[in-house]
Image (cartoon, rainbow, N blue to C red):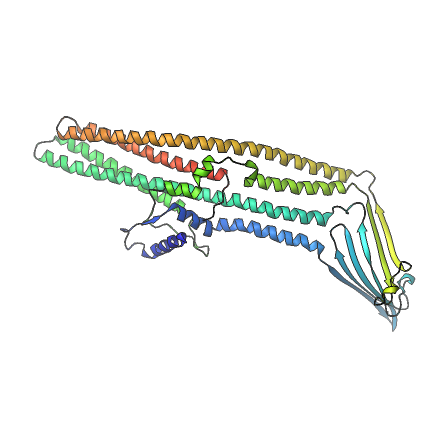
Length: 467
């Protein structure tokens, strides 16, 4: 992939640092963003949310695992065996509050409770236990499994939002780096022009064609350009360090961006293609499919499950159990309704204050989430519409500032010709040049804001692109 080649030259630059920076390597925006998505530790951390949800789902499924239990108890004192009891049980929990189980009892001893007497070869039983009121249609283990499944889907939507946020922040760092690099190139070019102008004026002053004060003014212009250049270098260094926080090797090793790596100055087509900006600006947005809305919807569904569980707690507990008993389980006809072990357990709180309070709290949580969904829906729609209009405005701003720079350049060229002919002053030339610099800085700033707005639209839609 392309980002692998990017990784290669970054790593090579680590070892070649200090040898030569005359050859520049271009780090393109799409390569950089793909590299961030592949290796950045926070992106990997976002994937842990999916793993966590899978682990919770596995844990909740454990409530339905078959269970084998053995209870053995023996007492012997002064050569007398008081009792020797063995009770083995195998349980299979099922979905609707039903539990299948099979048991084996073997008891002996001098002081057994009469109800514990069983045949010499033991007693077998097989039967069913179930809740016919509270816990039948929904119970704790059913609710936990449903909520774990919903949490897994919610985690995927949250992962997309998380990754999108990292890519957005990484994009802003790249655009800031590009802005600082363009400003550095701008001041380097104007410093070169100022030095050429200074040498020409200095030679003119030596032969008496220029006043000595023009040499002083030309030297002031050089120092101003040098100062601006040094400030641009510091800004570029800071932007490069900020960008480096998003550059990592495969084994979680951070990489520092080297001076010979430069941004792509013709990034607009790549930015639009990476963000798929044309489609984002034109397509009708279905807010309900937005990852944030999807996440909230799964949260609401989970709360609905919890509310159903709390409502079920208002029912009385009615547990019934029935087990066939036999000495010879291999003989089918020995299993009959005349020999059995059964039971009934009923309980019901008189006031249900705890249950009614839990249900009210669950309903309030659902209502709170519904309000959050309504507010999020409106906020997303308004934000997306505002960003689309802002992008349209920046298209016009780019045209206007481009025309201004062209006109400033023509004014400077005209003033330089007049100065060459002796019809103007160096002060006016420097003034025209300063206006041109301001215009070009404004163009660079508008480009940065234009790119940043595209990144904000990309973030507002929570797109998780595949590189």
